[in-house]
Image (tube, rainbow, N blue to C red; front, side):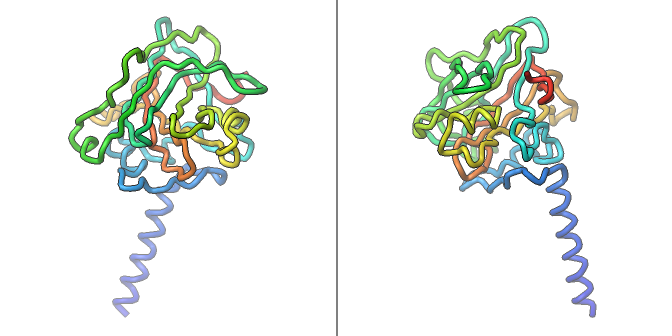
Length: 233
């Protein structure tokens, strides 16, 4: 009897834990896969930023991809900075930048940085090689003006047009990923030491393949406001 009671208690505890992890997950949200021999996205968020993978997610997936929060606007005078902070994707050249949204066809991309590097689990434990080293000519700051804009990343090993903060742009441009175009998970930037949210700063977990571990490229973007989908036009 005691064994059965313990078993029931353990089962209830497991269900409670699963429910807590799934808190905030919308029905359309893609399942996040474990990192292959890499830190899981949930662990990266928890250990580095004190964030919950679904509880703190600012752009949950929707049945209609056009309703996903995906665009930004500059928050104040001065440049926007877009910084790759962790590199766990392919070691072929990674690229990132910004774009002006377009209703039809591919958006016009502006590239700001590149790197050819892959962090290890030990790097995340020790802080070595963080952020990943950028290549010559890379820059982090840009001036998008006052109009809404999106962000993107790509990898040269995948000749597919890359992925965008807007799922609708991914669906238009990237035939390989069109069936699951939600490829950026956006969070507030929280200082884990203080527990306070850094104003006008966001963390983005990018997925540019099909396994959906969402930590191929982890970026921070500063001096921006994430727009509601209704305000993105």
